[in-house]
Image (cartoon, rainbow, N blue to C red; front, side, top):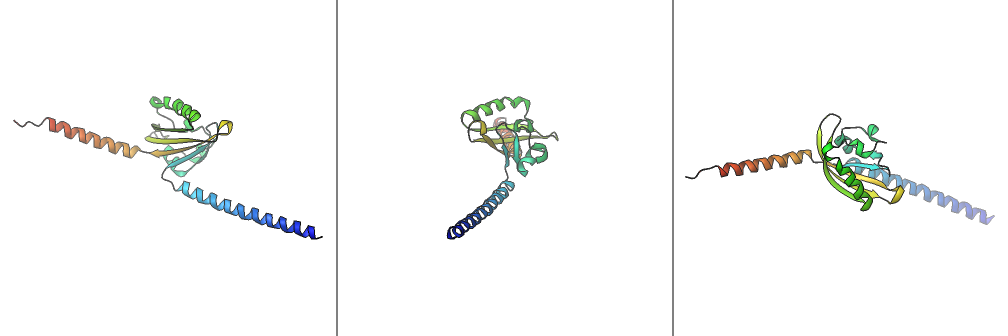
Length: 167
């Protein structure tokens, strides 16, 4: 009889531990979701085949598509990469297979026709058939144009100095 009470007590204690751990796990997942959703960077998670399984709101905004359109679609198809830069996809795949990481800059075409300059970091999580990927996108369009404008202003200023005659 005593052993029945001890077994029941142990089971009740184990059940409380599971409930406590589950609550803690849910709290941690909620905290992580808040961090990812408030990030100024786009975050996408794909399965081993490159199919999108998660995107945050910033990634949707960068690509100009909703999560509903993106989930289940191949990551490299979603971004509608500029044809001139398409060869980088093979480079990225090779680097991910070999090193597990890739970084690059490229242009994408959004469905609304807008072209965006992107900086992208991709990391493989795991190895082999079960590997998944996390991709971080930064839209650098405004910065790229601003740097281009400053560069053009600087070049123009240098050229105007060269044409000044001091005779």
